[in-house]
Figure (cartoon, rainbow over the protein chains, first blue to last red):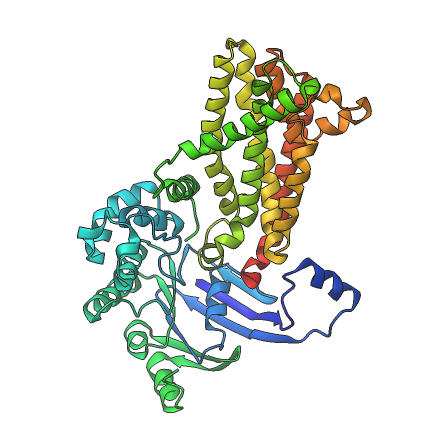
Length: 244
Length: 254
């Protein structure tokens, strides 16, 4: 059974200035400007089954984030259909809801709630979340006293307590030092072994090689190639776009 | 992840707003009390010393019955309106029922509201009024005000994503309402032809009902309560509908 299926999905933005002000909206009603539309995603189809892991590669503006937010249900396609069977967790940004004036512990609870964890599970997982992050001795201090790296580690640790059927990751794996990154990768591989679907957009080739078996290569919203991750990553690097 | 823990999420978002507001403030919760007391003293001075003809016995009680429901309404509506834009990161990047963003903001304001209502009851009691059976209606009346401002905030917070001018419309509407809600005057001073219109404004209806209960120690007229109920629930339903329609393109505009 397919867990994530996209059928000819397009996302179209109009390039004229967003109608942020009522005045310009009324004006545009009076004198309609010619619509300049561009495809953030062009008729993309995709089919992922249990245990699949997909790397999404391509230069900036290729449509990687658009694709993830469509699968997450955060935005709606303009054409085509997105079918998702199962609970989705989206790590599109770490530490959503984090506030600098709250303590580390308070932020853990807040972020866990935001990511969809229950009160019970948050309580059960609290100690292991804090352990994983390695910031235990500062957990009662306000977050603004943390270094940027510490904040990210705490954020990622909360995210690991989520147990989704489908995990979407957008460029959030470049967190912390090498030891911490290795821990993160191990944690995600654990999910993958449990048959969860993983979709990962990143520029960090090494991580993608470790995590993903399939890959799609996007450019300006269109599909360039798809195939086994290792093969596609080689081709992508060879093409010289590797360092974006 | 798809949420089935709305209560936990709502509680944490409310707690966040509340904690952020009071942390790093030496006077903390006293600020919730200071503002309505200052307004009460000012308006009482104006209407007992400057315009004594417009005064009423225990004017400070009379006016505080108006100030507190109105203050809650205006503050909750403005912060509710700004909430979706203010939490753009959550709305854009996290899978959560988006309705929870304006609703938690309005509900966080209810904590201050509860403190201010306690102040109101204290002032009423200090003025020599004894609690009466109608006080039991207060939670219903004030609850309907929360329902109304929730519905209204759902509409304006969604519109504010598309048109950033909505916040100024809301602020101006609040200024208009300060005069069009009977805060420092009574409905009996308003020409009869407008009474119906006043009663259909939930904020005015709440003020009138509070005054019935606390200042006059009588039951609010049932017709007033029906209107309050009808309009408040209507706005909540409309708010959920409009928000549900508009939220689909939030991520494209934030």
